[in-house]
Length: 562
Image (cartoon, rainbow, N blue to C red; front, top):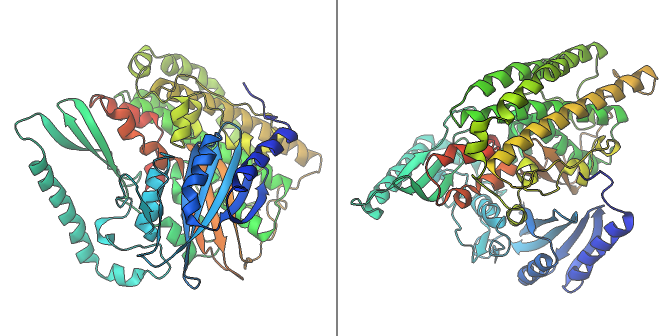
């Protein structure tokens, strides 16, 4: 176990200086310290991207978290933002490069051959902004539907109103594209063989449908091509149509199973640009509410893992305990799921201390049941036999594909934003990295269970801290929940990271002068990278392995269809 005091200041400084030494070999507009584990720099020439990326990878920076274009129409610029992360040494680089925004000139080299995690993120930037990535191995549209073909909806001059007037035509395009795909399957496949393409996937409209195009030969899987975006909501566009508080409604719908932590991440970025610091009470409430949401999500994840094996008891068992934690969220916010409980400046509501009675009931229920859950399900011989050697991800693959959360920790990678880059009141907690070693589906299930227990322990500490501070008169729970944030923000940008239930969420927020709403918000969520692994993990396996591996990756279709 590794304690939160992970390194000395001198070692941090040395690691960051090493990145600066690499950058100094290239012509940059600026190189500056951004945060403790972040350097921010801007390259003058896009031609330097590939050699710089090669040098970064050679130095041990092996993960590209995401790619975030920002369209500055008046300047004629498409500004590219690359977020490189070193999961081992905790040294990260925010890199910028300007491209011409004209479609024929908006081109740059793909980083996918060097950083496999760039694959889908570059496809998304191409689909939404029209950025073309040269030498990308598979530059196809992703997320958006067929009616947006050759249209780039996140460009600032895209006419949403005109597009939406053609609803009937748009729907027909989607239908025709699917029929054409099925016809091509019939032509391309040898009908005398046992090869076929199956459309696999859950289709619940609330959780978000996903279609896996499974190319198989009998029971053996030859390839898997995930098709996402069936309920694409263009959340990153919607937030630009609302003010900074109203945007919360879109941000929390990144995934309903842990909506609190996504709101925390967004609010941190707003507060940074506004130059606002929240109160200690609000910081501890963000921890307490965030961990309650994580518990709610983890209970769902544990249950769904067994559901995918055809064993439904755990899901029902977990739902019973989960309801008690939702009771507390409801007592605080008035809602069980879409709570809108966090907003820029702190937490939305003051706290009636009697609400902790609901929380205590949940904690008591958890303590009474968790031993039986461990005995019956974590030590379940069927689960161990079925999941032990399936879907194995190595430590190296976690780095290469930018994986995070319990998926990364199940492979022995010590990564947790609450420890690596503490926010809210996490820096005051003595947290430990919890890991498994093998990286199998079984390890990911066990990680969920262990992470769940850690979250409950954090809730208990946060609850006790708030109670003690209120009793001592150090916190006023009805007045200290919020500080004022200006309705208009200055021109600026910020990134924030939080440890979401499913892994790292990175928010990249851009504002214009006297802004009443975000100019650009990029929401990088972990299920995007984890779903990208399905072809990698399932190739050569059998059809019966699909639901097990899919479930073990702890995917939320909501953050795929954001």
